[in-house]
Length: 165
Image 1 (cartoon, rainbow, N blue to C red):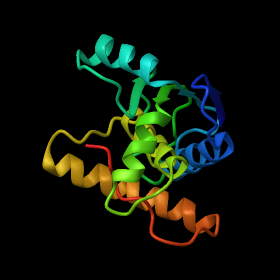
Image 2: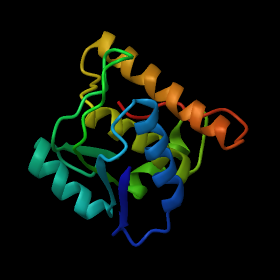
Image 3: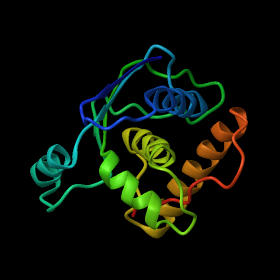
């Protein structure tokens, strides 16, 4: 799996954890091991510009996903995954920090960025949360991936609850 993490935000983030959680999520979703993903960490001003440009919404947001080849997980066990360019996930640590502090189960900025990375991966793979049934599926899958990754790393305590709306 080729995953690039590029921190342009000026804020120190755990880039290795972002790389690891993205790799774990893609493996768990059975994405071809030669597929490519880019994770970009930006400041609030850059995120706000992207948010306005692409969503026509004001202010910075926590995560945005920009799919390229619109890869999807294999639907059957014997189906082979397709190789391709997944696309870009853009994260904003300033928003992540605030969300982590305001969450029901408070958690760190890095924990929130890890959750948002998984959220972004799922969006790149075609998952969405506009409808209640879609939201239940996506957030359930997101929690399972984050929990599995945290367990594999020996991390204790509750996983961050989804703060992405």
